[in-house]
Image (cartoon, rainbow, N blue to C red; front, top):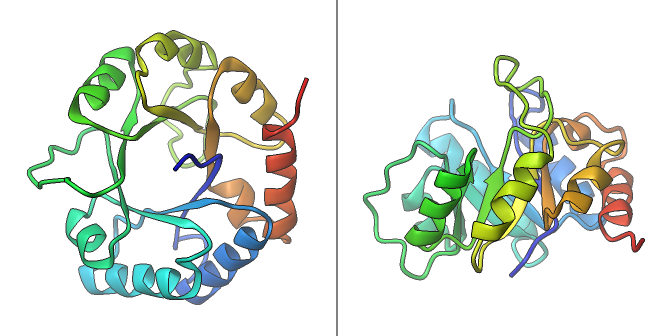
Length: 200
């Protein structure tokens, strides 16, 4: 399973009902993965949100939960681990990936058996205002050590710079603001995928 466009959720921007509706609209536009990333939510609220997304869209989009192996296991969905997350769970049978920010972290994720890595922060982003952007050179630098993993780029990616990211060697992109703030999430996803799949 390889995905090209992942939406990273943020309930600070949309409440749960609008979030599920936005994800649904995005899926109609071709979104092929969603990462439930809600670090401030209680376990119950997080489970309920993830359950609702799976119930409505589970056969149309790959679903990953950030940093919660228990929910991933209970709902039979994918798992995404933050870079700092020290995993003590058996991940056998789960499709999982990890956030990375350097060549060494990519090598480690490969050794751990990750299916993919999300590499950032590529461009300046409002969600991490104090983090320096790495630029697309970091993508080129890590390609030789990817192994069988595929690379999703994250951080300030929008319709104006997504081609630059793909041309540098990323398989796809993870996006938050560009989709969640869009008045037409489905059309925004269509535009992203047109650019991602564009043949030179």
